[in-house]
Amino acid sequence: MRGYARVVLMILCSGFIVVRAQEPPIEWIDPDTGHRVVRLSKEPGSQSLYFHQNGYTPDGQKLVFTTPSGISAVNLKTRVIEKVVEGRANLIMVGKKTGQIYYVKNRAVFVTNLDTKATKELGTLPPGGAIATVNADETLLGGAITGGGPPAPAPTPPPPTAEQPGRGRDSYPGKGQMMENRLAERRPMQLITMNTTTGEVKTLLKSTDWLNHIQFSPTDPGLLMFCHEGPWHKVDRIWTIQTDGTALTKVHTRTMNMEIAGHEFFSGDGKTLWYDLQTPKSSVFWVAGYNTVSGERTQYNVPRQEWSVHFNVSPDGKMFAGDGGGPNSVAAPGNGQWIYLFHPVLPQASVIAELPNSKQMITAGTFKTERLVNLAKHDYSLEPNVTFTPDMKWLIFRSNMFGPTHVFAVEVAKANP
Image 1 (cartoon, one colour):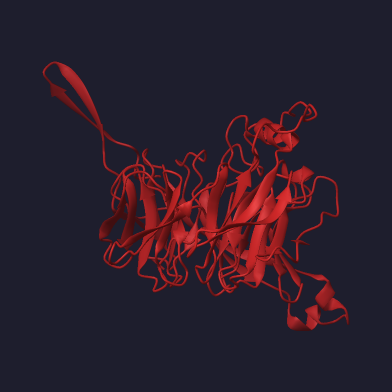
Image 2 (cartoon, rainbow, N blue to C red):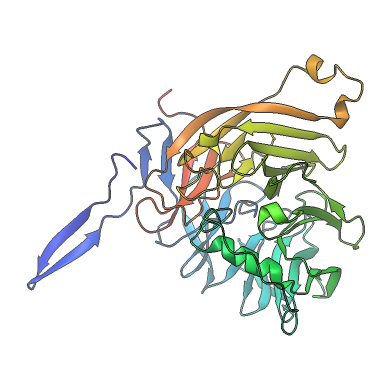
């Protein structure tokens, strides 16, 4: 971050040099963008949730995040932080209906009321089980069980190419080979739900595909989205299913060799599934959308320098955001390290409606882009995971640009217009 280089204070004490890192600033104007940035967390190591997990209360007043010592909530207006859960816990998300927080601690699933701190244990995870999401009316949790016993014999995966290590989603050295190995194992898995009243676990789907990225629709309690994980060019990734186990649907079918699609997420109204689409990989970049009601498809072209590890959409669907990418990203070289704001631009309605079967065709558009935060000093081994606040006035992200990880917010409106 230009203008805010890391500073150390050197103190001579009893013959020893003590080096102390300066605390990151609480608030500043990004000199490269003119947007106001604030630090919301106080405890180093604090992190906001993964980009598709809801961290906001229904009234939009609070953001819930994890810290090394537990789970906390910050009031987005006053910036007052309150500890909600003591001790390390796996935060699932904030309920869309009640605003209670759901989390896993010592293999048990809990729900806690943010106001009263009243806590209830909902059930115990089955062996190999994990919970990833909560449905819209908070009657079901969604997750997966991985195998019982050793995986079935797997073919030897192909050797890694020079492109694989450190590329793709959640980049780190060796990730490409790990993905190849895990896919080849063909471990037995089950897609499951857990009833929040009774704790009953039901199986929706059995598979030897690697099931991951599980997320409920924010509005339809019965619609669950998940992915077939693995190297993106080898899997049909994005799927939906009903909670009664019916209507298994593949969302995207590739039409060219090495085409990839992933990092899928729901729109605020639950009608559209958005995802990162590359046709082919590392060449042409899109944010693509599939309307679950009408089947219509929309794609916004993204220049290489504006591609992001994760994209997101505002609650009203009128703006998108991205968190940029590091030097090892799938868009490298040439990808930018910024928090981006995107305004979608579509062709005129008369152009879209020119052909009688236009609704069965892809509507292609572009993004008008604005840079909000310079992340040149951010290490992308930690993903920023940008999200819109419910009032759409701020973007929340996590960053290590000053060293320790903290939760930050950048104002969408320019401070110095």
